Length: 377
Image 1 (tube, rainbow, N blue to C red):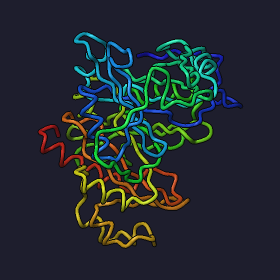
Image 2: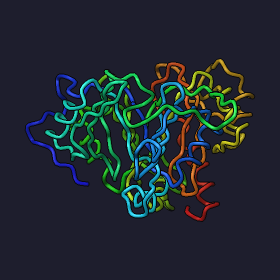
Image 3: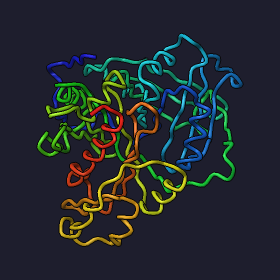
Image 4: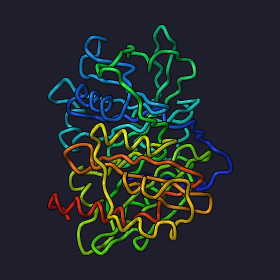
């Protein structure tokens, strides 16, 4: 999509014309929502809280709403052979369709962004049931991804009208300590990063928080560039990646080859105890990228004193990085579907506000090893 912006709109407005309260939900279009819901319950500790489908009067799709902490995932599958959902899954595989944003006024959010050049996904609408009302509106961002604005001040139900409360089928589901969405990363095509930086600046009022060039994010074989966009209060952060020239194919190129368009690459989820969270995720079968043991040999010299024992980090393959505000611990899953596209990051911030720049080289070498096994490097 090509984004048009009005010349009179200021790139850095003096007021926040799009106040965001956080991420409301992330919706995935998937091939089999029931089985996907079981996976996220059993492997990641999510709780099934709501459902919509034929039993609730919805004839063309089924959706399962999963929750843990402040995180909501909606898993949606088509019941028809020729729907937009079916086509989306055929082209992209399982992937993120909607990054929904929690707002106080969905109509005003749509008006402010569309008048600044956003392409409308759908106009504001209000839906109601016995628990109250929810107002929704939507705009397109990169690829086929949609930002839905969700106004739910007057709603007390399980999710929103059209859904019913539902319990999961996983015996004795237990959460693993996942708290909230820290950031969502998008991959775009060659030369498109600055276009989307401009979109988030001018259309949504975001600010450029950090820039990483191909010298920051490179290995012997591949490179990429990234810019981190943040809304006014810092509750919503969207890093945007694009490929850079290298000897071999970068992870961004591999994603674009298999997703067949720009889209969400990974979702970073916060925890207060990454060691306990990751140990439990590993026990449940979640696969993570690994770095060589040599990464830990000079860790303290590189990042300074930390609270955790190095051996415990090494055992779980956790990465550490420091900035002026403190340090962070992070780890990345392998792709959670057969296509090498969407994956997750688990992150614990102990003061740090950055994104692990010091780990980029080790991380991307690990990704390259996986690419080589797939024959895609």
